[in-house]
Image 1 (tube, rainbow, N blue to C red):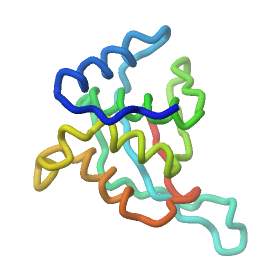
Image 2 (cartoon, one colour; image 1 turned 120 degrees about the vertical axis):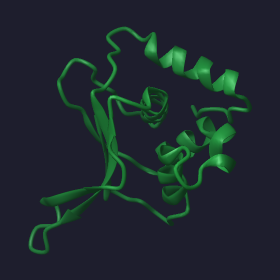
Image 3 (cartoon, rainbow, N blue to C red; image 1 turned 180 degrees about the vertical axis):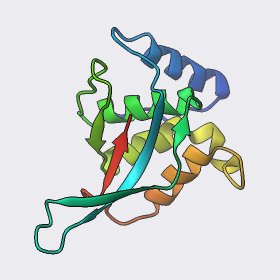
Length: 135
C-alpha cells in the first residue's frame, strides 16, 4: 500500500490522528533522519550519523507521518522501546512526500524543515541503505 497524496491540512490532521491513535503509540522525545557514514574496511560498520535536523519535543505531526511512511514501506514500528531506528528507502520517501503534499510548496527557509529534508531525499537517485530514521 501507499499513502494517497494528501490534498488538505484537514486530511493531513486526519492522517496524524490515525497514527497517534494506534495501540502503544507514544510521542517521541526526539527524532530525525540521518545519513550514515560507513567504514572503508567493513562497509557494514557504521562509523557516524549526521542529522540535518533534529526534532526535540516538537513537530509530532511530522513524526506521525514518518511512522506511517515506515509502516507503508513494510517496516514494523516498535513503540515499546526507548529508541527505534530504521533504514529508510525510496518507498518511505514517496509516502512521506504524499503525506506532506499540502506543505511542499511552503517548505523553504524556516518553514516545514522536515518537509525540506524529505524534498532533498526525493531528489536523490537511490538512498539505498545510507539513511536511517531515529526516534
